[in-house]
Amino acid sequence: MTARNHVLRGAAWSPADDTDHHAVAVADGVIVALDDEALAWGRTHGAEVHDVGDGCCVVPAFGDGHAHPLFGGLEDDGPALRGHDDVAGVVAAVRRWVQDHPGTGWVVGGSYDSSLAPEGLFDARWLDEVVPDRPVLLRGWDYHTVWVNTRALELAGIDATTPEPALGEIPRRPDGSPLGTLREWGAIDLVTAVAPAPSLEHRVAAIERAGHRYAALGVTWVQDAWVEPEQLEAYVAAAEQDRLPIRFNVALYADPRRWPEQLPQLLDQRERVRRLDHPRLTAETVKFFADGVVENATAALLAPYVGTPERAGMTVWPAELLADAVAAVDAAGFQPHVHTIGDGAVRLGLDAVEAAQRRNGPRDRRAVLAHVQLVDPADRQRFHELGVVANAEPLWAQLDPLMTVLTVPRLGEERARTQYPLSSLLREEAALSFGSDWPVSSADPLEGMAVACSRQTEQRVPAGGWTPHERLRLDQAFTAYTRGVAHQGFRRAGRLAVGQEADLAVLSSDPRTLEDPRDLDRVRVVCTWLAGEQVHTTEGEHHG
Image (cartoon, rainbow, N blue to C red):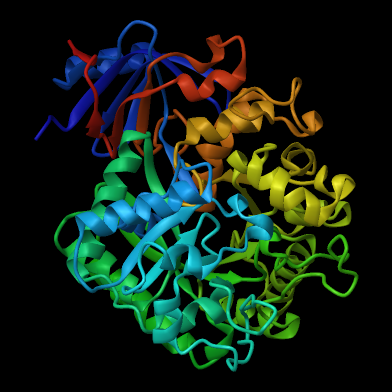
């Protein structure tokens, strides 16, 4: 165990107030002094001094305001589907995994690139060619879609006579038989209901792996944005076994099909976590899905999708029921966290928070609308007026294949250019936090900020950035991933200031020295501190 008193000596930057420092002293999990006062404090308190290294820079540790770490950790247990640029590559990866894991059990993996097939529609027969006898369930990158083989469809009882499920879609062939792609939870649940759940140990190990991965990225607090009872069991077990490498707040999933009868269960789940009184686990949030995703044409829009005048997406909760449910969890002291991709869903979410405010009165609720991919200009100022946190995933604000192949054609060029209005929201004084939605996309905050500041792909396309008026300054992007997430999480963190939690990251270079902010993804995390203790380090740190 390292000493309780530490001084980090070297260049340090607090983006939220854009101040520079040359030393940070920490004790009992908080920052106690800065600069010359920190060095003097260290001498009088016998602190261990850490020279962060020439060229390195201390910043507040990052938070992730919206992610799915348990899902991300579980992906390690199945076929590795990322990084393939065609369907054949994904199928070959499944074949190799099956050859290495003989047996009769389910093949479960994630997460494939939905843009590899026209309209994101994948055929069960493509998987049947390599796995005809074992059920296969693969999750798409968006985690709102799965691709299954024929055996999985058979076990789930999905055939030409299966009716369209509530809150889901079963794409079909011309003869009515299911194609092999399932969209949204109402359809996906038909298969997951018959697939075996991972063991408790597998789930605990997945959380532990995810925590270590986050620590290596300089992240010390994560909002798990979708936790159901069996997943909560894993978090509780991980806490009881002291296998939480970082801090997690879990968002308990609210299901419109079980509302309002579900509310007592949510209260019981929160109380169970509170009784644990573990410093790295809380359950103070409730998650709602207001809509789906644009790539499936299930995001709720204010105007129809291109070429389908009858279709403007899917609302998961009827507006009145969503307002009632948000008001109910708000009255119980929960923080509402609402998935809102389309501008129609954003309006529904804001309306629901406004209704909760009317019914329950003013309080510091910090409701969160996650993703905010499309926000009608008339609604942007409402975030500030209602005290709503706009949580965005900045890595998505680029013209990658998912955007160009699936998203833009569904929205049309003009509407597509209004996506991810990050700078516009800040101009309206919205509280902006960043997240990754990992494993939907990379968990690395530096990769996300590289896009936020450039609106370019890794190949620097387009020159000057896509929708360049929505680019953020470097300090704005860092603030969203530090102070912004800390504000979302009701934490005294995200700044280098006395009294703040001593969650810190040491970067391999000062990001402000970069000529091009798109190069942020080349900066690396050297070490990570949580509550004044080192939870990750790489070679190169020096102790004085």
